[in-house]
Image (tube, rainbow, N blue to C red):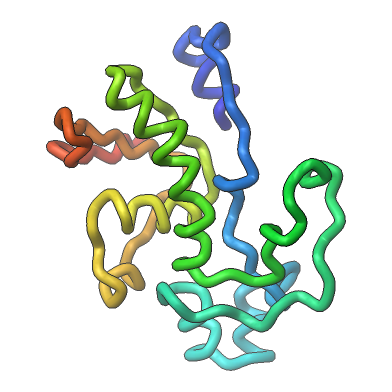
Length: 162
């Protein structure tokens, strides 16, 4: 998706940074199960709690996934299951160190990530409380444009719909 946006905007010359910290939330034992199967196995309410709440963690995956993309990462940082809160804790250091610092320098940033990691970031940016985060939907393939002031407070939010 990032390459598609860059090509469409004739910005392929810009540097692109990748990080595991923006990866999708780790759903643990739910990984590989679709929502319907998960609901049949664990129950509708439990799956809703695991998927949408801020602090609920699904059952851990039996063993960590060995993936070459994470070979150089500290394996103790690699989760076997995460709550949205844990996803936010993993993501925010990257946001502050690499994204916010560039925004403060006047450099626009494009963040391309998965729905849950974007929900974790949006919760922080928009100061959404733990109860209301359940209702936040992040649309697929519809960019969200934030206009921010000098202290990175949101002045305007716009969802670009096709």
